[in-house]
Image (spheres, rainbow over the protein chains, first blue to last red):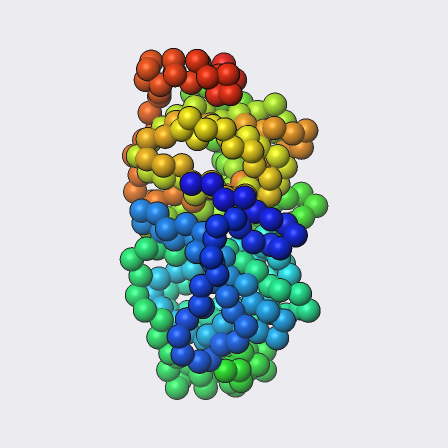
Length: 143
Length: 143
């Protein structure tokens, strides 16, 4: 029920690294399940320099709290810069992608409901709208 | 949907401080609701030097991740020392109390299910057992 954190490795005792997900469209992402209790799951994700998560949307919200490094996120039509302890929530069906924006690992906590829908790809209309905006366009050129 | 963290104040933009709870049995605790989404709530608690939370138990689990300072927790019959990013889960009906064990604020994230039972006081038997163990006795002499 207790797991010590090792600052020298930025890892939790007894918490195993898991594959981020199957399929493509992402790079350099690892996943660490910290807790899975009644109703919700707390996970730690880490994105290597140059890495990025899959571009997706789903009904269930993410509650993200940055822990280390620098990140940049697409959330809906907005771009958000993330430093440690910054908080971001993804609204239902908002397209989102997390990107490492620095030269150190970018790590964050992500809490989700235990019962949740599967991620979906974006529609052609969503991709076109994001491609037309110079700020969000870089987020759809990856993967 | 986004809240920047200010490291100089250790506070989140737009997140208001709320009372910890009504009644007595605790000291120097503040509560900051960070997110309340479908199925779960993420809160940040901060305990001032010398402070401690209420001694209680309930069916719903807490998932706690320390963020700042030094803490010490009673969890069931065990005492756990907490430094930043250490992880603790409280099992169902395990008596627990969080104590500031340093001279700086002790802060931690605590995630709970949205639907949860109310905290209960400990039974006389539980209090006697904790009082009889020199390690746990200090936790029941407060409040």
